[in-house]
Length: 154
Ligand code: 4NP
Image (cartoon, rainbow, N blue to C red; front, side):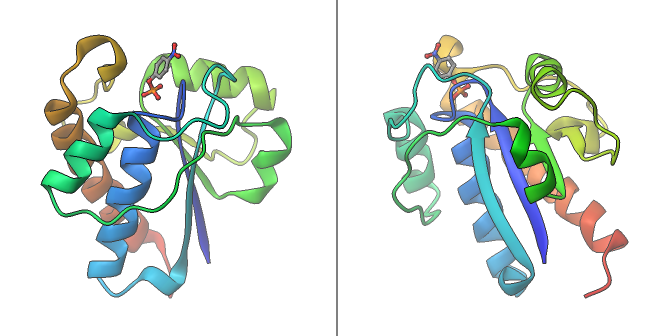
């Protein structure tokens, strides 16, 4: 079982979008049983809140199934519960290092670092551009899944 946690700031826009895009992707590749996929935020600002309407609209537009979501915060104890923590921007990476204290098992990655164009995924909470967020997260998820498949023994 490969355990993946997508991480952003509030856990209402980007990381739940990544969670449901990635769940759909592994399902379509027949790999759903090999994964446990979740998402969390580095702040407690949105604790318990559902996904942002912009994220829901984008998932629906692309026919990506999604379930109930309640924002939760990443804790130090999560480090041992997952194999990969996939952040959306460099702030998420710094915050994860602060929360975990260290990354001794090299589990922390920025999503677009799996792609040629290594950059942050800008926060649609501020930009309002959820369509761009969807495109960038989809590309990052594809490249991340390719990376895992190359490294996994099923
Ligand atoms: P997210 O977006 O990190 O992609 O979920 C944000 C959601 C909420 C806030 C900031 C970013 N906030 O400040 O409450």
